[in-house]
Image 1: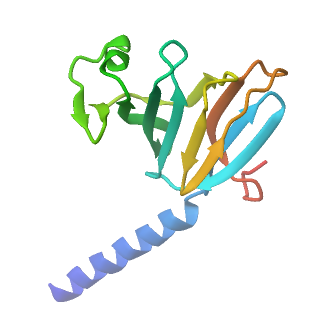
Image 2 (image 1 turned 90 degrees about the horizontal axis):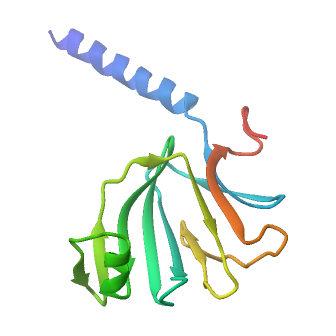
Length: 156
């Protein structure tokens, strides 16, 4: 019986090593117009977008979990209760100076958004703070996608 249990452990270890070897590094690709920048990320990393709301001028933060096939919103934070209500949230709780909504949203394959000249848009990923500027050539359009990292077997 002991030998059988040992064999199962070896088989499990082998399976994990094969899965890890086959796991392809993923990159978060930020694109705006013809510009593309990639940042290496891991599945389950957190990504935060913070910006000033276009109507109210108050701070909004959207927190996403990076999944293998996209982005899942798990929390939204609003500086004002009326912003949570603006987006149709009825169960916001006040926490540490923000109105917080916890969500189990569907996985989005991409995040598309527009940056205005006064939105103060910032992408936060893996300890990096990346301010996003308005670019008149792209009319402020930005997109976040998950791609194969450049330089890997399937990378561009």
